Length: 253
Image (cartoon, rainbow, N blue to C red; front, side, top):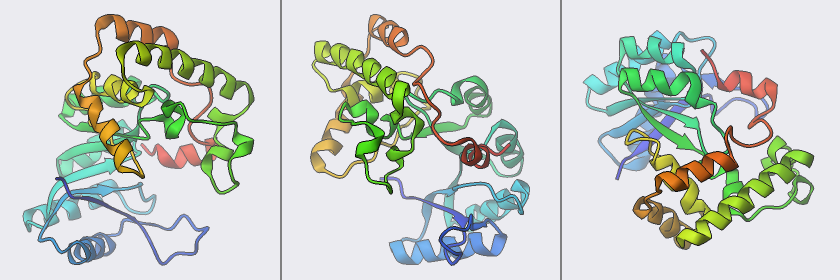
C-alpha cells in the first residue's frame, strides 16, 4: 500500500475562491495534519495538487525536500503542471511522479510532458484513466446529468462530440468483447502498455469495480490490438477535457 496525499489549497478559503496555498508554513501544516489524521509516522507520496502563482516552485520543492530529510515524507509528486515547472522542481528536490489526466480519450501529456518525465526518471500517474466514466461504456448525454455533475458541462458529452466519442467507445467494446474483457479493462490495459513508468489510478465506488479494474493488470494487449485501438482513437476523444479558462490554471509551466 502506498499512502499518498496532497497540499496546495487553502481549505479555509471561500467556496468559490481559487484558494491556492503552497506557502511553506501551509505545506508543513498539511503534512503534520495528515500524519495525525492518518495515524502514520510518514507520508509515502506528497503531491502539490496545483501550482500556486504566488509561490515559486523552487520554494515548494525546498520545503518538501526538508520534510523528506526529516523522514516525514518519502517521495515528492506534482500534479497538472508542464515540463518547465517539472524541471525547476526536480532541480531542487527530485520529483518521483507527476499526476496528470491521461487516457485513450486524453493524450495531451504524450507530446511534451511524457518525454521530459522519461528524461528525468519521473513516473506518470494518470488520473481519469477511464475518461471520467465514458470508457466504461455506461454513459448518457450531458443533459441527463444533474447540474452539479461535471459531465453536464464536459465538452466530451456535448452534441457531435458525444456522438463521436460514443461511436468510438462502441468500437472499443467490440474489441474488448472479442478479448473477453470489459471496455474499462481495455482502457486500463492500454495505459499499462504505454510503459512500466505509467500507473493509472481509476476511481471506484464498489468492490466489484475495484476487482474489475485490478483485472486489467492481467490483460496483455497484442500489437494487433494496439493498432486497432490507434485506428479507433488516433488522437483521443472529441472535445476538450476542461474549459479553456480552467485548463490554463491546470497546466502551469
